[in-house]
Length: 94
Image (cartoon, rainbow, N blue to C red):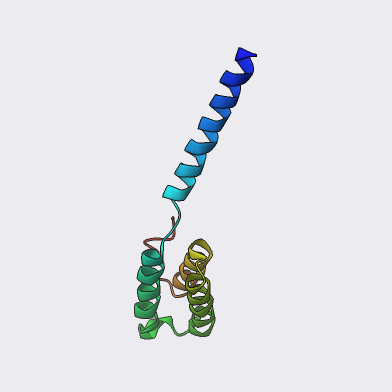
């Protein structure tokens, strides 16, 4: 009986630690805003015209996801837009 209590407590503690670690790495609205600014700057670069239309679609998708609170998906779209534009993705690893 005592083993079950200890095992349950350890399992709960493990889940709490895992959940807090995952939430610590989640992008925020501020990260979305920063990446949106990076994409906007990259789109103003005249050398980025080859994939500009597709990058604009990725940026628009990123904005929509971020506006609805899906920050991770939004930042993934912003990162893809930056990749298409050949820009450095500073926050893509989040």
